[in-house]
Image 1 (spheres, rainbow, N blue to C red):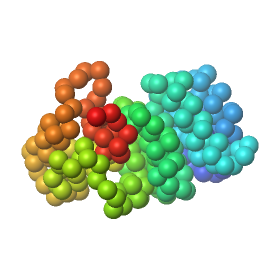
Image 2: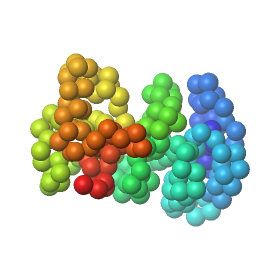
Image 3: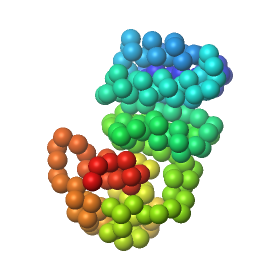
Length: 215
């Protein structure tokens, strides 16, 4: 792990949570340039990035996160922020939502869930803060490609966009695992997403959910 956070106490807290969770933290950084240099040098599985890093305390950390995803396609990137801003999350995701997380800093306090999110991102999954996803899901015109889905299927797809597993989707929607699998299969069929080893079908479905993918 590589951790970029300018608040020393918070950075130490994040590192402690990660090490207690069994992760190996190989680099700590307090500025955006330092984070970029160290992460490129150590090439960890995951980088934990604060958006408002020095020197400008604007979106420097977000820019580093995007650059890391561009230069190290296999790295997982988890952005920690106080901003529940969908535009930032979408900038981070780009057209590749695999191996990416966008979480509010308050989530670090839930150690078990935070570590689970980091593991999911390390394995190529996604972890989006429910608060941000809720904003993304505000009433809007349903993209034509999603109009074929039932309301339940769209709910399942929204949970997939949060990075939830089938078991997690079943718990949140109060349906059985078999029902989740049936809905997921139907989503793939209706969105015409074939079984393709080169790209994860769930990732392609999420791209369509955010209207980022190709039809």
